Length: 367
Image (tube, rainbow, N blue to C red; front, side):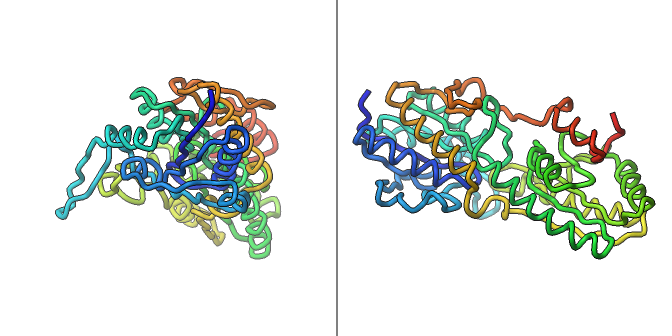
């Protein structure tokens, strides 16, 4: 198939490496097929409004190292369940999917590249079922997508979190403090687990393992008794205390996208520790620092490979699929097999066994 016009959008949260994908799709489509590339702005909202920009090798030549996305993105613009807030605060839900399909056809596109995580790809699959030729490209700092070894954006986020731990190690040791670093991870603890191991954390708390505060305190007390009064705790925002659940910063009903806003587990944990042990505790919330900034080399290469292979797959009419890293190759998997699924850390994960084997406390009794 000769590609004439292709479209690309970025949905969900931003992360490092999005622009590397945009650049790769643009260059591969133009250099290999002489195609026009249409950038759809603001995620799926641009597919509703028709807000686009032409992408060329010239306009994308300097974006490889740039964080964020030049197309813009949103996690609030699902055309199938588009939410608006009325003056009295009531949230109304609309189905604008037919409008989005109409826009796609008006743009005369041969393919739509949908770059995003679990939610974005699920929307992409719904559009595929409505007749739009879709190819997904996996993006999320959380690394929680099925059928791919890694998503781009993850390794950069891990490195940022690891750098933060390195800095907390020195100040924590200097003052004999317990230093808590809260990172992102609503349902999956991949960032906390990998960055915690890489940064030498003494305690790692992830959503998959409900922590017991007694086990956390025991680890800190043992270190203090052994002559190391300082401790480093890495905690994912979705970490759950046994019998309590996650810490919610805001009720779901108050948020336009209808998703619970998490946050505050680091400070909550600090209060728990201070009540039971005579040490100063300090909390750092890394927040959106994990999402911003230039991608590392791994994510630049992975984003470029995924984007290039997505164009190659479109030329073969391999629609309804996602490009995936199955080391060492990039392959295609069916969107229907992964849309809406979240990959969490298995309790039998080698990473967890590795962490506990070297003395890292995961908030539970040692297995």
